[in-house]
Structure formats: C-alpha cells, structure tokens
Length: 107
Image (cartoon, rainbow, N blue to C red; front, top):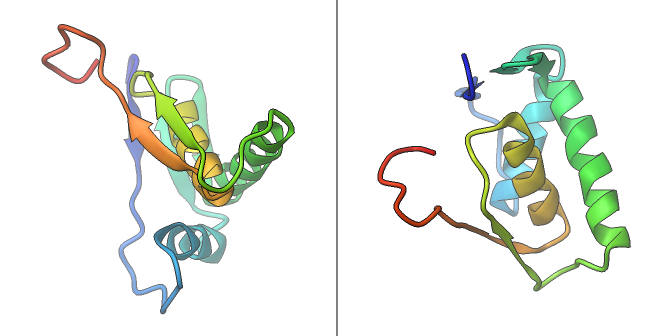
C-alpha cells in the first residue's frame, strides 16, 4: 500500500459513550489485540494505536495545546495522521483537515 493507510473499522456495538472520541477509544480498547491499521511500515493493533494516541496527546499538551484549541492538519493519507487527529481530540482540541492547493484527489 504505497503512501496509503488501510484502516480496519470496528463495526460491532460499543455501547453508549459521551463523546465520539470516547466511543472510538472504548472500541479500540475492546479490540486492543486486533489489527487496526496496515500501512507502508507494517501493521498496528488497536492497542498499539491507543498507545501512540496517548503518547502524542502528552506531546501536544507539553507544547501548550488543550481544550478549545484548533489543530490544522495538512497531511497525506498516513497512519500518523490518524494518531495526531485522535490525540488532539483527546485533549479537547478541534481538528481541521486541510487540503493542499490544487489537490483534486486524495493527496
């Protein structure tokens, strides 16, 4: 999968969560041993994905980001983009995904 990320979605009912991020992270925890993402450097389980999300969230918090801040993502289709998006959401940040100028297809 050159340059792309395959995300294996969780489709079973995860129960009632108070936020969409909380719902997703609960699902990741429930299926922590299953493969979540296949990318150019290998595969991550949901457990590995959660670990990366919380490590990134700690890094963002040290940089001063927190609830109410906006994080703009100008990235391609990479596994780390998923990590960054959920890490920002864990801190209560709003995420805005940007596209490169002139990019008509998934870049």
